[in-house]
Image (tube, rainbow over all chains, first blue to last red; front, side, top):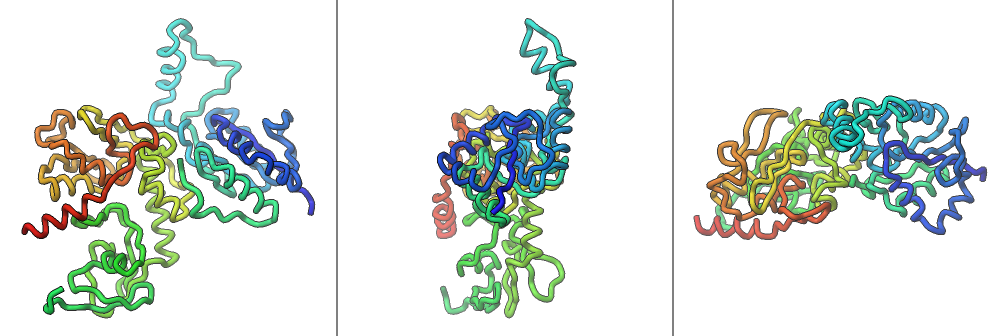
Length: 176
Length: 239
């Protein structure tokens, strides 16, 4: 069977879901028989490939860079998976959403850093008005809930995809 | 059961069941091992009919009926698991999650929450609706308990247990619709309440992390509800 290509990355997330991905331990050898990892913090390729079959996308969409990236990923991905609660619900990054953007920036760069009261306007991505779940920006094909999703769940989902089936996760996953 | 109690027969999901004439569809279903989801209903308190998760279809009636509020009738045909109901329940849960700030991963009740469990069981794995992110507070003025409006789903179990079982009626509801909030006494800080007996029943009937014991961190607040049917029974016998 032809190998599928896989990309994994995080936007506004803590990388915890990727830690959980690594927690599949030696089963990653099994997965490597079905997937070529083309783009991921694990393989350190700089540009997102022209086309990948499956992308595991961790994190919420919070900045102008995230927004561009998520649209690019959608265009260049067959099956886009919201990977973990930040991607699925906004989760912790979205806890800022009840405040105005100006309040958030003031809190971070003025109130919390009295010795260097500067709100950066270059070199760092611009925050969007809110942190968004991925599917509120682009179409998502599968939702892997959890903070983080368990290693077993990740392995089972990827194994099903490798076998050409759509994973049925209902009843096995939950938020949090 | 005395001889004068009338028995009604009906079908729930094509199963023939018998019921006492004053029982609700939800009570009869649960007695017969048929699970109808609910969040505001809790055994031992009056029914409220607010969460809408127990809506069922009854043949011949166009609208959906809340199973917890609908008394059985002879030859009633009840359906609890149609595709229409499954979709509706998912939608209702999505509305709950979008209406306030339910962040399971950092909630005191993570892993011990009826709302979280219900989303898992019904396969509600993402929310279509825009989240509202309301600016809600947490009342931590009470010496032992805290109330977090962010996690409240307005099931009113706390209001009912405070009134019906404890008899204090410290808790009540203010405003309407999406503005509805749980209040203590005359909308004062809980810590200033003169009627609260510190019994903690409200905390333990709360299905989410909206009411919790102070000092509990993420995932540490599990609720103990065994007392409720027992206390309710004792009240019944006293009457």
